[in-house]
Image 1 (cartoon, rainbow, N blue to C red):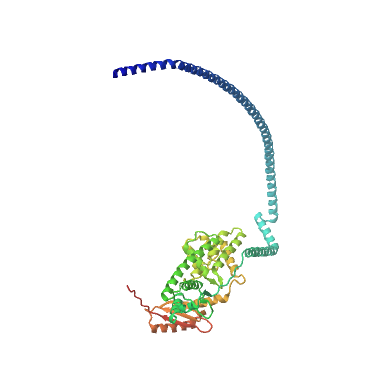
Image 2: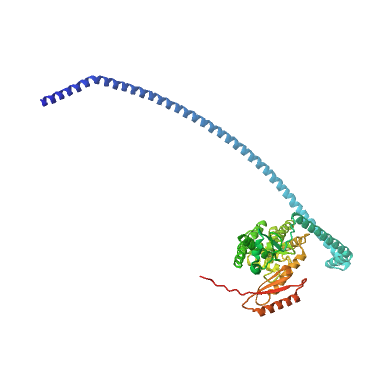
Length: 513
């Protein structure tokens, strides 16, 4: 039964396939024939388009070739025309050159002929001159050389007075003209520079917010104020003036350090001897940085680069020095500008060297109170030590005639220094004498053995001397005050009296751990 079913299924499948093939075969033949026809049509169309494109390309190429040939022919014509023009110009120039050469040859022949005639005439003239000299010598019985000497002698005798008078007038005129030109140069230079003649005083004022701070600053039995004055060398004046404390000292640098230290103490509020010492050390460090910045600013103002830091610091210290009341740094900058202005009007002078030498000419004053010798000599040694340009050193060292003038720049610096110092109001001699007297008081007190520090305070009415407690006992300290007072009487001139105070202090410290 199952086998019959399987056979029946297979037979049905075969009949179905055969019937389907019989039905769909005509359709597939039609589709294939249609596709072949479409392919032929597409192939024919593509072939026609390709032939058309090829024909167009050939036509365009032929057109381009003709165009290039036309351009090439045109270029050849232009080149040929230009070559013809160049040949014509060259031929024309060659003709002109030949004409000039012919003219030159003719001129040369004329010159040579004239030269031969000149030589011939010269020989004839020389022969006649020699004959005349022989005749004159035979008549006067003098040789040619003797005759010249006799003639010169007579002329000198006859016109010597006139020559002397003429030379004297010329010298006077030259001097007058030189003086006028020099005055004109100086006047122009002075007018170009603004005069800043400020006078420094000898006191500084510190503002305080509360009157109670005055008591703190004085301290118990005055120990705070005494410690402050001992460490700074500045006189602290506390009076009834509301909201202010006055610091008095002729040394501007010392006074500035004291002002910075006191302002820090007032701001902090803790005031005792140890804090005072710490505050003063901090103020000294900050001031050291400040003077470097001041020196750098001054060097930049006068366009002076590459100065060593020690030299810049010395420049900055000049800000805290005065000469007859005139600020030394301002004076140095002014001398630099004046020297440059003068040099710009004098042929052969180097204005750059003058400007730099003017700025550095007084640098020795920054340490003149610490080193022996004039400030010009000290400044010269400092600049040579740090390798400053030799031309600058040569120009600055002669401004007070400590050295001979070796260059025109040296004379310009001397003139600029004199101009700056002689401006109306630039200097006050009384202040300079006062400061000099205070320094002299300190110097004499510090010359004794065992003295550590000495300060002139209260406008020179008192000298405070701090001695080494290990070297001097109380008896020797008392004798020291007597010796200092007698030496001041002998060597110094001062109004009124000067009190000598010798302070001997033993300090014992220990650390608890």
